[in-house]
Image (cartoon, rainbow, N blue to C red; front, side, top):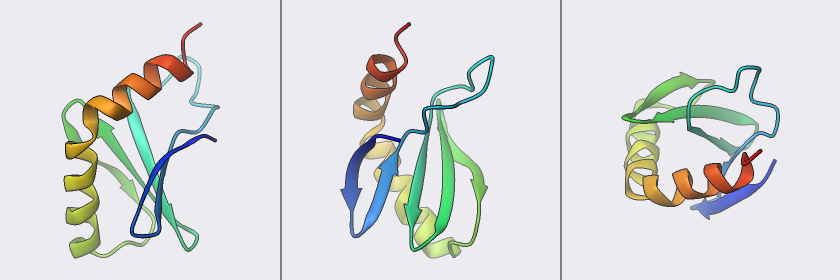
Length: 80
C-alpha cells in the first residue's frame, strides 16, 4: 500500500487491492489503527472507523487540497 504523503502523522495511502471492478478514485487516511476513506470526485467521506468530526473535516480539507496529486498517483499506480 503506497503512502502518497503524510500530514500531522496521518498517512494518505492507496490500497493495491481495490476490488474487481476497481472502485472509483479514493484515498485512505490512517493513523493509530484508525482508517477513513474519502471519495475524490467530489471529495466526500466514504467511511470512517473512529476519527471524530473535527479531524474528519481537517482530513477532508487536506484531501481536497491534494486532489489532483492523489488522482495523478492513482492513475500512475493503477495503469494496466
